[in-house]
Image (cartoon, rainbow, N blue to C red; front, side, top):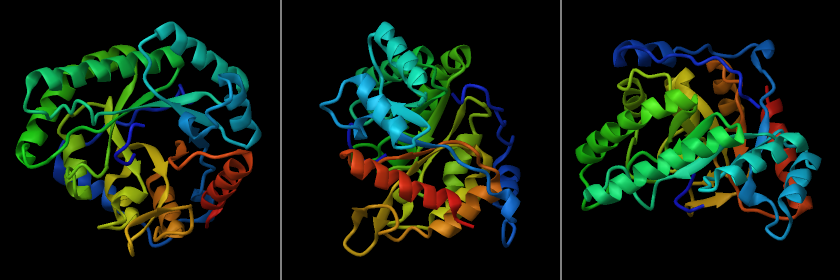
Length: 298
């Protein structure tokens, strides 16, 4: 996810490696070309906020289904009964909610003020309970923010300390906390991202990989091959280095054939979720069409 505020219930939890060296070496191995049979069909999802705001919940979900999408990414709710209703409505419409975008910008777990960081922890707890109520299996978390007031080492240590306190609840609810690569001046290399995840030694802490968020300074296919099976969810968008601007899919600098091959090599079969501006039905159908192209790349 970019800096803005904005059923696959049964799946195998792959445990992470017990050490950085072994884990990274194992996940960086890749073949020169994935065989055609290695390209599974990836389910495509859309964020609830991309659907026309004027529509009722039921009409939004119906439109997502009509456009071809297989799932929805939603947002935390304090009212868990309302969250349960939203999840039931999504399943009834044929587009189950597969993940919850919490974020973490308002009250970073890395904040120097304990009261602010604690507010962030409570926010993650709410997101985990929302996910359970909706029938989702993952909560997206921006784990920390590095800035002039927060040193990198402080962000690293504070965020890990607070996430460790949240993992028992994640295990109890059977919801994965997935930390995302985002423009927060943190986890700036795939090796470090892999290390950060591995240091938890916990299957309920995984990686949420955003394809375009690394394009400004790196190549997403490299990150995918390094992170490997740590990746549990994927955000799809595009980015152009010249002018540093977000673009529609296939109009930026993402090398989609290489990205698709990298996902095949690591055996990724989860959702790819569009994180793009919203629009009308014609626009959403075009988004889905372009996502279909990504899925079909050989």
